[in-house]
Length: 157
Figure 1 (cartoon, rainbow, N blue to C red):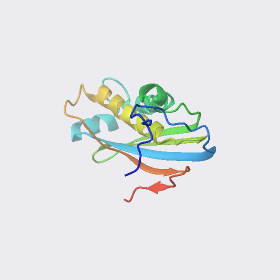
Figure 2 (tube, rainbow, N blue to C red):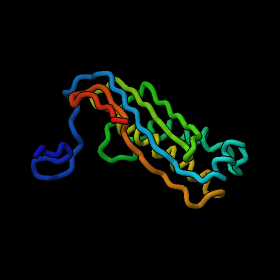
Figure 3 (cartoon, rainbow, N blue to C red):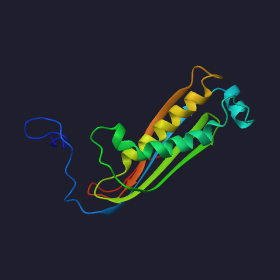
Figure 4 (cartoon, rainbow, N blue to C red):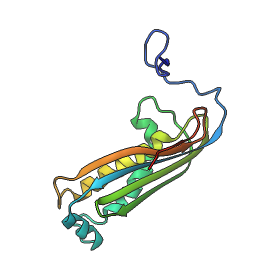
C-alpha cells in the first residue's frame, strides 16, 4: 500500500513539500453538470431569470474560486495560475460546466479546476433556486490533466 503523502511519520497531517519538485507546465480540465427541468431551461434560454444571467455570474464565480482554492482546501498549495477559463453551456439536461486551469509550478492544478466548476455550479443553483427548487448538481470530475510526476490523465468518454 502506498504511503499517504499528507501524513508524517507519526500519522499527523502535513502539507506536502514540493520545494524539490521541478517546475513544469501543468494543465487540468474539470467538469460538472447541473440538471434542470424544461421550464428552467426555457427561462435561461429566454434570459428571463429573475436574478439575471446565471451562466455569466457562474463563470466569474468559478474564476474567482479557482484563485482562492488554497484558502478553501486546507492542504492545497498556493500556486500562481497562468490561466483559468470557465465555460457554461445550456444543454438538453440543463447546464454543462467546464474549467481549464494552467500553471507552471511544482504541483498540479486539478484542485483549482475542480473548485472552479464546483463554485460555478453552486452559483447557478443559487441564481435559479427561485424558479426550481429541486436542482441537482452532478458529475463533478476531473476530465484530464497534464504535467507532473504522475503523468497525464484523460477520462474515457
